[in-house]
Structures are given as C-alpha cells and as structure tokens.
Length: 178
Image 1 (cartoon, helix red, strand yellow):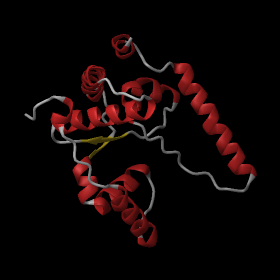
Image 2 (cartoon, one colour):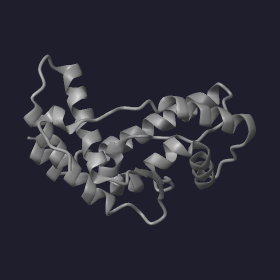
Image 3 (cartoon, one colour):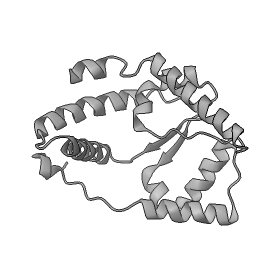
Image 4 (tube, one colour):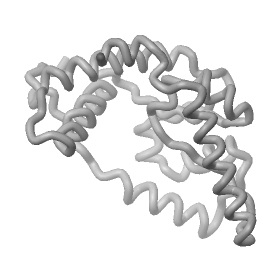
C-alpha cells in the first residue's frame, strides 16, 4: 500500500479544488464580518509532492521551500516525525514500517525537490532558526508584504520561541549515523 501511494499522486486535483472552495468560503465569511482580505499561508511539507497540482489550482501561489544542508538531517527528522506520529495513533510502533515509509517518502521528496519552480524562495532551515530576522525580511519581501517595527519584532520573537531543540538519534531506530 505504501509503495502504491508514493508511486501515484497522493492527492487528486479534486482535493485541492475543494481546499480552494473552503478558502474562498473563509474569505467570503471574513468579508461579511468586515475583516480585510489577507494572504493565506498553507504550510505543509506534503505540498511539495503535489506542486504541479497546487500551482494549477492556485496559479498565483508563492512557493517557499525550507531546505536542510545535510540529507541525513532530513531523513532523521522525517523518521522521528513518522515514528512519533505513529505512536500517537497506535499502542505499538513498528519501526521497520516507519523506516520503509520514511525511505519511500524521502526518495519521493528528493525527486519532488528537483521540480521546485524557479521563482520559489528557498530558505535554509538553520538560517531560519539562527537568523530569524533576516529570514523574516526575505519572506516578507518575497510575499510582497512590509514587515517592520513591532510587527517584525513580534514575528521574530515568536519564531525563535517556536524552535525548541529536538535531538534526533538514528540509533533509536537501529540505524547507524553516517
């Protein structure tokens, strides 16, 4: 099943069209309440696997991609997330299934990263966490927004507070570093 999901398009065009309708309904509702229009931010790493569809349904979308320098860090993070998400849904975690799923998703992700559009903003993960203010300026500029003064300070403070250190250890999964 896992192999089939990653070999095919996991999300259909219909799901993104439905998402667009939901966002339009939210915009309509906000307008009824007198709330000015705003930019939607849809943050999900899974969108990278469907960028072709995303850009068909949302042709004006701005794509922002966070990247890590070390592929082992990417894999480590994905495996950790998969195992902990599984532990929230099941009483036991099959580490071999987690590794198989992570292997396939990692390979699909590497292929998907090759298809990132030229106009996308690429931000280094460590750069975001260590130089948050600079990253916020780049992001705001890319999105056509002005961010300065108290608004920038609040965003930087929130960004720094949200990045708690997580230590990923591959040996927890029976894998060796390197």
